[in-house]
Image: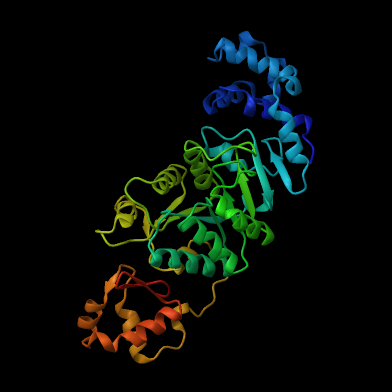
Length: 369
């Protein structure tokens, strides 16, 4: 694509150093559209609370964008490459929800892939970059089941829970949206370049509000999180410590009127402290993927649930005794009134079937009621 004349004012506001979301929102509130900058003088912008330096730089850039903004040529070259798109609020594919609920909607979005994902109901799945093996597996399996039912899954392309959510969706040949905290030409982490290729090949999309070559600076990720929260119908937090970006996403989702879901965990596990706190604060407790599916009425969920697959009577008893919190082998032995060695074979079979995961000598339920 080429940069359209209607997009230029938004790109100017996007690229002029010192332009903040509140300043942009105030300008649009008073003037209605970025095009109004074509007719503004520095003194008029100063009356809106802008500094003289910023007002002068903005007016000069509006009058001569190609001369004043050297980054503009690089962005134009990026936009001319097949599959790359710029979205500004003047474009039909720009998600209107961002302007409705964000105090600082991005003046420009960079997109590769299917833009329809920005407008369809979907679930955001977030969590720890270093999750337990059980929660990583649970995230993968839940997202696979939800994607198979027709749900779009989004996340932030980070290691851990984010990657498991994307990969679980791909395992069901589903569509997933990755929102980056870096430029689209600077995928972070670099080990996920192949994952991005798989996302695009499956009909998914990657999105950023940052110029394509922007590195993954730490300050970019909270901004990324607000886009994840705003675009989704609901946000599921699988695992999070008391201080984590996932909790920022959950807090923003609640502020934006989105449903917040959380997986409970053992109170002594650091990765469970954040999700347990969310539940205390009113987040919806979910311990099976059907809890999530019930929020999305358009899904085609099969009548037979995963745990309904053929199990022996003893396997079914063992499975019933395992919860979503880690359950020790010794606890299962007492609950089922049998020696631990009698549990090895049924537990292994439940693991192989994907119903149960092991975690440090304990077992957790991954699927089923």
